[in-house]
Image (cartoon, rainbow, N blue to C red; front, side, top):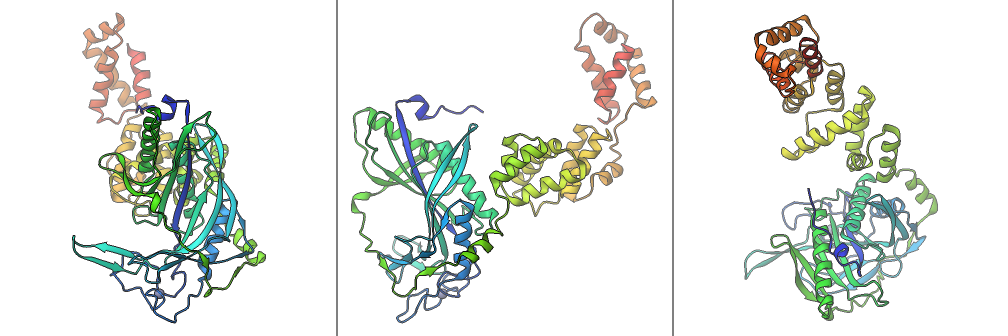
Length: 484
Ligand SMILES: [Zn+2]
């Protein structure tokens, strides 16, 4: 697949400065300041209480699990955890926010000064994380028709962490790698399902472009709520090109918020930043300071599993597979476990990796299945690979066995037996067949002997045809050499 060269490689005198803010919905049982269920997709306004609807006199009570999850996010991204942090009120008016303020962390966030190491084209780079703070999500406005809108407060009070980088990212590829790593990390530590389509992992991108030799940063444009890695990469690439186009013509970038239009493949103006409001932050008097005990942090640290980048490095070292393949296998804990369990049985890491990347993931995608819904289990794939290694079936038959196994959940050895798929090996039967073919086609055989090597294909094709594709290709070659 060829890709268009990036705008930055075509205009090397320019550089981009990118910072990313990600909102991650935490998958706690209850909401952040009340005991309502924290659930997606229920009937509107069923998971609500006086705290969610901001009735007079109610008080927020902080969910300890949400704090634990925020600490996990911090530890997994190399942040320091603040002994004391605090909650503030961020004031604005919107129908889905009945309190008229959002409870968030402003001056004293729970985590600070972390980093994630990314790797693009074999070059690693640290993307510094400025802060991770906790906050509540707002409700949702549902615009039914041109004249009618509704408010659903089910989402109000969903616990969020917002993870903010320094502007250390300088290309669409780096941004995508950072986001994919962060996405894997929050799933590994079990704090979020990070479902981008359902909005539980939402990225806002700040981007500016300037000439390399210019001291002054370019004007910043913000892009909001882009819900796939692919679109984020495309949106950043589009924006860099747009900025360079304007700057090269001597024009000026206006500070604004833009949205990605998937259909037209371009960013579009959403609102001007000039009307940015002053949120009048102040410490929320209803919530005490959040004081975190060090022992608790060390107990939480013990629950942090092997993280994606550690797993990738281990897979490459321990199993000798390609880094690129390891990255895909380490995308989720489940996929990594599947790989290791299959290898444990057949001890063929490269084959397992190839079959998973080509066949298993392809099958899941084609049938819109998750790994846990798929009928293929690690020891079934291992058994299939064993049958290939032992020359019981050839690789073409193995493809059919894989598909059958995925459809029915039957073990490969059973499928091979039931359908009589064993390849005809170096048996006398195959020997006789090759001999007969050479004898009965003297013209073709002589043609080959005279130097026309393509004639070999005729015999291979005939053998395959007469054995129903079950002959071992290596053995056919050997036998043909013997008789020709
Ligand atoms: Zn509630």
